[in-house]
Length: 218
Image (cartoon, rainbow, N blue to C red; front, side, top):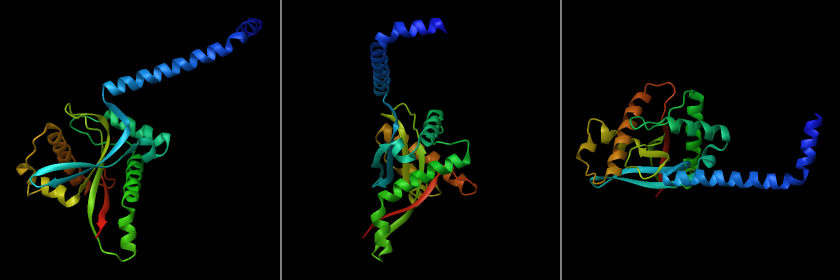
């Protein structure tokens, strides 16, 4: 105990310097981590909401919203579960699957809330009896890890249910699409996996994908 007290007395004039060094070390570590993420184009703390649809004879994908994981799942527990699932995602299984079904439901409900807020005007118009045009959409949380994907981030893929079925169901419309770039071809591969999940979900008690009615006011 006496040696500890002597050490504390010795260090007393230096505490401010030690605190400053620790602070700068923390800043340096954070900088190096961000630099590594930038070089590797890894932005798992970002969430991109991507609308996917057929335009002419091709596939289109457009950003509905880009935000932070914390703005979607709101607390450290939810964000940690999502990021852990994103790290487990693989090329052949890009959709996030959480071991606990309650966690999976939590993840999808949070996405549902964000999308509902994004299309609040449509719901308000419907409640006022104004004409609206809507259709059921399917969504899933992904972390696509194809080599030609520009940036690695969590993405919520949104697609009209009818479009998904037409692309990969009996019509097999996907086979006739003109897909000129590798990024769009990779996305078409992801959507094919999504269709397989969609078929499995129809008989599942706790589905992996989510559903929402989206549309616009006429």
